Image 1 (cartoon, rainbow, N blue to C red):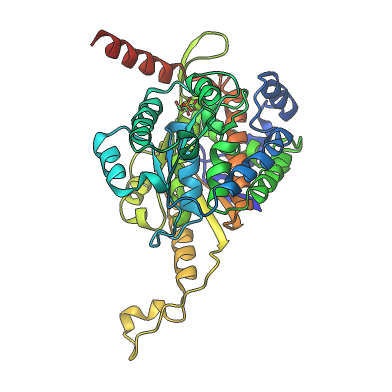
Image 2 (image 1 turned 135 degrees about the horizontal axis):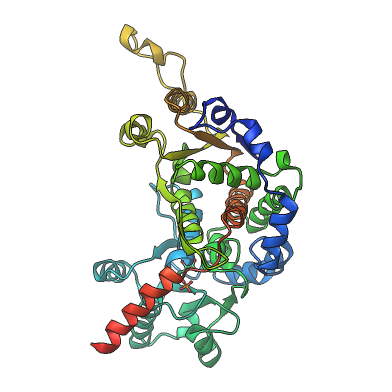
Amino acid sequence: MITLRTENLHGIPSPHGIQKQEMTDSNFQIPDLLHQISSRNVGFHDIELLKSHLPKIQKLADQQEGKFQNIVILGIGGSALGPICIKHAFSNPFLQNPPNLHIVDNIDPRLIYDLEKSIQLKTTLFVVITKSGTTPETISQYLYFKERIKNANLAPQNHFIFITDPTKGYLREITNSEKIPALEIPPNIGGRFSVLTAVGLFPAALLKINIQEMLDGASEAQKSFTSTDPTQNIPFQIALIQYLLYKKGKTINVMMPYLNRLERFSAWYGQLLAESIGKKFDNHGNIVHSGITPVNALGATDQHSQTQLYNEGPNDKLIMFLTCEDYGHTLEIPRLDPPLPSLEYLKHTSFNELIQLEQKGTELAYTQNHRPNITIQIDKLSPHTLGELFMTMESATAFLGEMLNINTYDQPGVELSKELTKTFLLKK
Ligand code: PA5
């Protein structure tokens, strides 16, 4: 379950805080915003659509069991950040248990060389994820490993699985001609909104994460998203806070989880916020150059690198803490024997209390310095709460885009650099 704490924000005086009344006085009506979102025909919040893909995803994942030592995901942007986040959320970073899941979201030749040197093709499955089926980074990775598989006399249909659009793109074409097993990304769900499709759920299922529970959590968030009562609608409240602060010059949003396992959630959210909200034009064609700059931070680690800036630097940020009540394990910090007066503050303390109190201390310091901050709290990290978090932030982004009167779902800036790269390659 997710709860949103906003009391610090309401306690910070104008112009840096947001009084409760300001939120109530906003002209935004949830039914209107929901109507605008539904008129865009986007499917990320369509729980029935997401659920309808579950059996096929689970079945294909189950069929891979025990076959591979390494699973390599080839993809970039929205086709990689979700799987990276999911893997990070449910893996022990100090252990490698086969199948090892590697997510290769770059074309740095050294990275690809290092990967190739570390795997045996015979015991490797490549999962190629691209919604458009044409992204040069992903397609070139695929071509590279396709040739390696061919040269090793291995059957491509046993070593590749594609996740792509049901009808469009190069990958879909060869799915059909070369009989490569494939899963579909629904046409109305774009890259950065696709984590709850096969893009995120298939890698999750390969890691034995309960994907049904992830969608149950998403479903809970979706109920909040469609509630017309603002006090029950967490995505609406988050978006409204982001919007009101943006209008007050807070153009940077820092996401700061106090859970190591959610460190990569910030990177996933960073793409969602940056690509969805950073737009030159509004819906009427006016030049607006809208945008909020996402910044990733990790508590408590970044208390010792970024917190100084956030407390005393420019007051241009909203800090979004991500916290949990229960870390799943309680670890006591042993008391020094004989006790040392300067370390007595640690007596009878656990790591759990320490990290939670450090978060509270940081929150209070920001508030005293009039630095706007909110806290998104989960009870415990689980497939359910991660699904809920994904859907909450996707829905909040959808609301924010409508409040800003922009198209949340396109990315002409990304497309432009893709096109220019192709032009250079063709001229070469
Ligand atoms: O959100 C988006 O649409 C993009 O960031 C894409 O995820 C990214 O460009 C990769 O595209 P594709 O999945 O088509 O390879």
